[in-house]
Amino acid sequence: MDSPGPLSLLPVVLAVVLTLRTRQVVLSLLLAVLSAALLLSGGHPWQAVMYVVDPLLMDVIAARDHVQVMLFSLFIAATIQVVSRAGGTRALVELVARLARGRRSGMVTTWLAGMLVFFDDYANCLVVGTTMRPLSDRLGISRAKLAYLVDSTAAPMATVALVSTWIGFEVGLMDEALKGQGVEGSAYAFFLAGLPYRFYPLLALAFGAMIAVSGRDFGPMLASESAARPVPPPDDEAPPSPALALVAVVPVGALVGVTGWSLWRQGTTDAADSARLFEIIGGADGYVAMLEGSTAGLVLAVLLAIAARWRVAGGPVAATKESMDAVVAGMGELVEALVVLFLAWALGSAIGELGTGQWIMSAVGDAVAPWSLPAITFVLSAGIAFATGTSFGTMGMVMPLCLPLALQLDPTASALAAGPIPLATAAAVLSGATWGDHCSPISDTTVLSSTGSGCDHAEHVATQLPYALAVGLVSLLCCTLPAALGPSPWLLLGIGVVACGLILLVLGRAPAQPPARSTATPDPRPD
Image 1 (cartoon, rainbow, N blue to C red):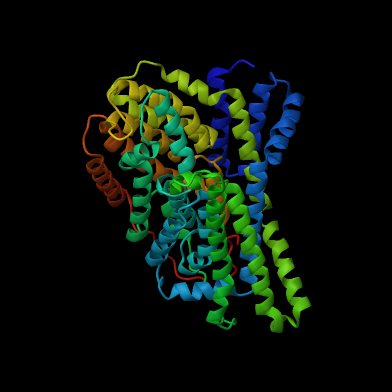
Image 2 (tube, one colour):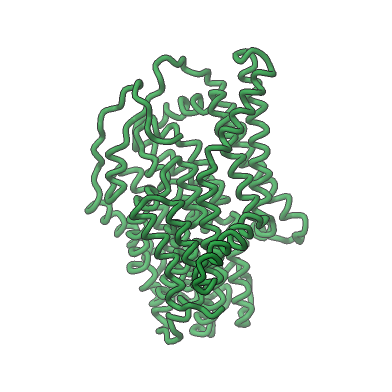
């Protein structure tokens, strides 16, 4: 079909506006998908309804990568529930609470945990969110703040880490563009040279640390934090044995360890003897690795839970039944989140068919001043990623367009001695895509961050967006825009950090903390 032009933005606008206004995520996404189907079906209502079912939902649910995402999400949810019912989560929280005795130390601990799970953004969202949720509740940290800290370390960390499931893809795109322009040398060297220009993800990580350390907030997040109350454990529960913490630590450790081992094993199968570490990781299937890791974590969680509950439950049969009930209950809690994920995937597929990204790129035009190319590239990538909810799709679409143009503007560039325009432009593609991934309500990581943290999805989007917009504007105006003129990117990063700090100092304030609620009052927040 012919592109509907600016009308291709309608489904995205509906999804964002309705989500923020009604806070009914499923309904908002469903209406957005239906509007896209109406455009694709020529305005025929019944054909549009059926188009939503088949092919949109059928195709996205049946896609192998999506099935793997669903399975490891379900396995992780089941693992957390099994560990929790066996007492492992509370025992771990009791140990961590000795270090994190207040809100600030709890937020810093969460931020550090997000930095440590650097190899995959999905793993970060689910592992850090679910593991740190009980501690956050106890310390009176809102679920919205937890979701923000998780989300602001997920994609931003994965995209700049020297070893992650993102790097092989990113370097591969750069390699194709460099070879297409006859530029010789290592694409990985070009990637490393451009790391200081990755302003948005680096500033997003720094801003998350500032939020955690300062304890200051602004916008909707301030209201969420002011309404949060500490949730102490019931008085009638005896403190768990510290040894029970192993029921939580071992499965999570297995998840991380097996995932890393799988990435290495897969990548070394076909890699040359001289392959670098990033090439090995880039040659692996991250979805398969996460599925293997989550399977190992679930199996170990069930076995350890049975062993821990053997005597208390009255024997192996009763302990096994308890664990299986926990598996089913954990998976059941993920149903609504999976529905949101299905609709987000369907919407992304529909707007891909509508050619939304191509229309945005064509609307920018070909006449670009050299000094403005990195800034325009950042805005273009950010807009496409926000509209489509996919960072990888945006990178694959914009990198072949903008990096060759930047190399033409710097004909003497090489992979080892590229000028600021090519480096800043390539970095702007990746940074803008990361911003869109961070902000878009239909992004996988946005959905999984709210799911893992137990936060209402609409609240997560509404509370995170002002922070991401603030950091995005700073990275654009203070860093990316002047980068092509030649100043040191490290100097620009320093200016960006100072600007972010000033924003927090001027707009932020400490949330009003109400007294801790009585243990007899049930916590209204979902588990």
